[in-house]
Length: 119
Image (tube, one colour):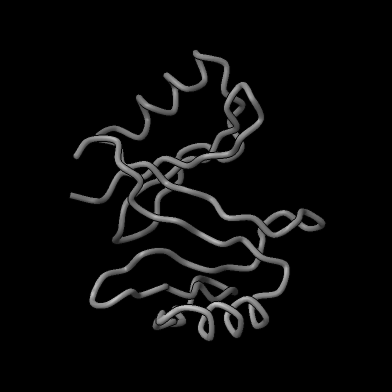
């Protein structure tokens, strides 16, 4: 389905506390993966990846969930969002071996991310 929500990510100030809370609240399997100097925790629900948990990349910002929408062309969709008044928070960034994403704030102030999987 085009433009469906495909991933959700918790950017948190306390990864350990978040992992403890959510692993007890839900039947999630949490798998740590190295991501440069940091660790990214994949959230598995059954045999599918449903999201991730990571240390918030913006020091001082509060913990927040970020939804990702799947797109066919992350560059074109990011530029279209910008032309419609979005503020780009993170321009198109490649995740080696997985795909590319961008993050922006819509004209109402809500943050959302775009995701294009690697083909």
